Image 1 (cartoon, helix red, strand yellow):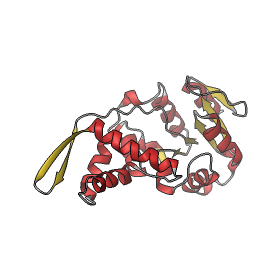
Image 2: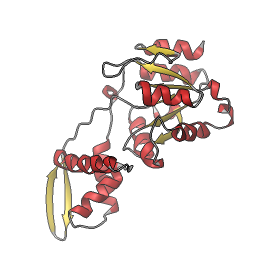
Image 3: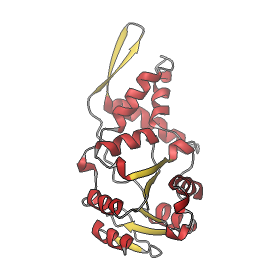
Amino acid sequence: AFLGVSGLTLALLGVALVWKRTEVRVLSAIAIGALLYGLGEHSFLHGLFYSLEILADGLYMELGIGPRREESLILADTLAGPRYHTWLWHGVAEALEAMHAAGVRMGVVADTDWTGRQMRRALAGVNLERFFGPVICSCDIGVRKPDGRIFATGLAGLGPLASAPRRVLYVGDNPVNDIAGARACGWDGALHLTPDEGRAPDAVLEFSDYRDLVRRVLE
């Protein structure tokens, strides 16, 4: 089973210190976030893929400081996390625990500007990283859903036991990128119903309660 990551609420808190020679510039994280996401929007308009780490590098270059890898990672990680249990949909942790206990192999395939390292860090912060094998993030491989290559990369990460596509279920909340994308690869799709997205008539399950997902997977 694969899960998309959605419903992320970005809370940009605190300040970041930017060094230039002996001068210390203090910028609010909200202002930095606006700069980063502004650069990111520009990148998407030109069909490019980016991560928060790449954008943080770009910010330092824009400030005329030059590449500062350690500081870029600190800034990117500040924007990416940490995450707490309020980040999760109700019932997600219990559902993952039940499926893991039943031997279901799971991974993450996500469209995100988080790198795989940052995604694992966020999942570990809410004690969920232990449930997942492959964690595939679009910014790492330069491919976004519904492109079949991102699904294929995730499937390969699960290993030989996942060699039969009909046994793979993708869980997401976007009818096109998640469900249609998975179906085009021969997978089943389960749509988590949210107020922001529509329905998916080709999904094998539409659910709001994660207990319904567990019943479907384990039946």
